[in-house]
Every structure is written in C-alpha cells, then in structure tokens.
Length: 116
Length: 114
Image 1 (spheres, each protein chain N blue to C red):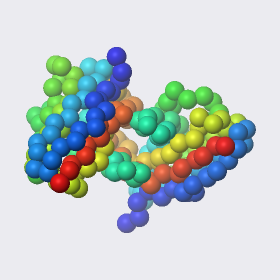
Image 2: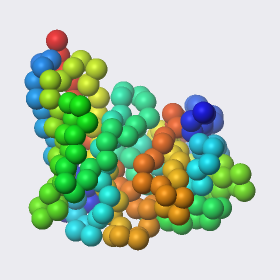
Image 3: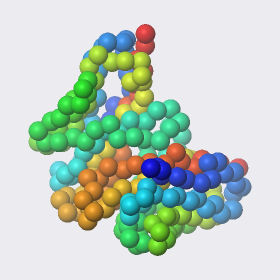
Image 4: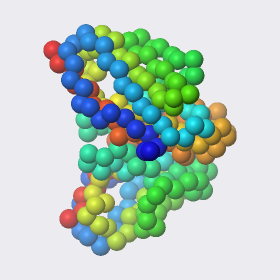
C-alpha cells in the first residue's frame, strides 16, 4: 500500500514568488494535515483538512492557504514568499475520528522549499 | 508556558544504557498523547501512543501523569539504531475536540554511541 506522497521533493523560489506543494494521502484517509519544519525548530501546525473542508488552522498568515480535493489529495499554497518560509513542509494523513481513527498521523517525506 | 515542552538534549549515551525523556503539556484537558521518532532528514513516524495506564512495547515504556501534566518515554538497553529525535505529541483539544490540534514538541535528540 502506498504511503503519503508529496511533490515536489525540492523547490527553489525567490522572494515574492508563489509556491504550490502537493500531497496524496494514504488510500482511505480523509484527513490531511500540513506542518512546517524550519531548520532547528519543531513541527509547526499549518492546516488540517477533512472531507474537503478546512477544519483547523495554525498561527500562520493568510498567505499560507490550501485546499483539499474530492479525492482527498491536498495542495498547500504559499504566496508572496519570504526568506523565512524556507523549510521542510510535511504532509500527513490519518483516518478521521468518524472513521475510527486513533489520531495517528502518517507523514510523507516532505517538500523542501528554499526561498532565495 | 509552552504548549508542549521537551528537553532538547542532546542525550549522548552508550549502547545498553537506559534513557528517559520527559515532556510537559499545558492543556489539562488534553486526551491524546503520542511519541514519534524522527530520523535525520526523514519524516516523523509514530513510535507509540501513550495510554493513561502506561504502556510498554519491547524496550520502550511510555507513561502519562495527568496530575502533573507530563509524559515520559523510557528506552532500555539502547541500541545504536535508537539514535534519532524523539517528538512528544499532544492533542491539545479535550474529548471530542478538534483532532487537528496535534501539537508537536521540538523533540529530544538521542545519540547512542558504541
């Protein structure tokens, strides 16, 4: 069974540009989470989607946005990139509580964004 | 007080040593607790969930102290392959609350030496 897949693996952008990161959850998982992990820092919660809806949002500015598609895949958009947006962006999926999920997150390998 | 706080380490221990990590959390209503492991430049992976009664999985023992709002992870007979960063994870929402409130600690780095 395929795990969580993310693309691209690496992305280099310049300040002011826009970045789009993509995530495919494990088959059957309806919940998708996005986390940012900057160098030397812990995972910071960005967004949670379930059943196509944004359910929760972390303490990030509005230029971080995303969506979840009917097939439960998701994309994260970062507009007006700043140098401090350089980080590893991790996507995770899980079964929803409604599906009997226990809260375990399954992570993808991440997309490393570098802003020059 | 930070939502989830861990000693950053690093913990440098010899093979065979017993090592303990602690983690404190701020929301007394939190209901779900986990330990994840993250190898260098890899994604986090679930090590074990933490149950109220404490739970053990081989060389790993997790305990929860609700009164003091801390979680512990004990690793016995440590192996070289245990070298990684251990992340404490807490669902900050209370029962029935948003499952999107999983907050990760910054992690404790463990290095097991021969």
